[in-house]
Image (cartoon, rainbow, N blue to C red; front, side):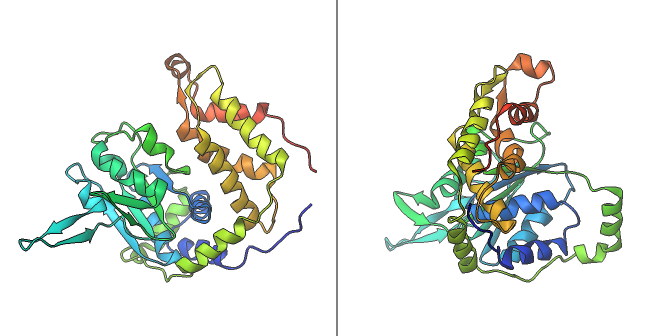
Length: 314
């Protein structure tokens, strides 16, 4: 079995820096870090006022690099996200870069804008580039989208398409704070007026960590376990549309990061279990009759976890 390794100080420093401003929400913070080190994106959903924007902005500040926030509104155009060519009377042109060209992009209230503008994020999230008038323009490296949204179906929202949702490695839920957490928030209310943390990492350091994480060992049995888990959900009789291969990839890449953060250079089935819900729930669509019976995507993920055989240690 591979030996253990140390994840180094940077991941812990990032979490510590964010926690100076954002009280609680440790699971969401860890998902953000896992996605960053996996090269993925995160969708944070929750009610208004539950620190979705604060969490995304503070996390971006902590990891350094170039940060842009896009406040999504119904009248926003795709070019307000991607940029456009400015043509002059003398026949020359200049490309005006949109806010998508950054290392971390906070797409705030993504489901407040129209599907046309939502789609402006698709190419960048999948291919790390934006094509405008036939020319491809690379975005930042590393590149990560942190999107927030109100719960689906809330007034004034436009539901994200399946294609859009599938681009997000993880979906996180930002819940109301506990009574103790809210008391800590109230005690530090002045700090929240102008929240800011110093960067504890650089884009180059993040890219180097990603390369190191690729060396984390994933045994054949663990890979088969991930595939079996995804297929158990996909073929459940209550499922209309199940998770595609991106769900499998999210589990594998994310599990490597969790192992790395725990100081291991090998993945355990428990790493997969921790990420099963964040990686798969948003990729599951239920049959109408199952929804009427109270079955939810989370129910089916839990069912698959219970019913899928866990590989024995090598």
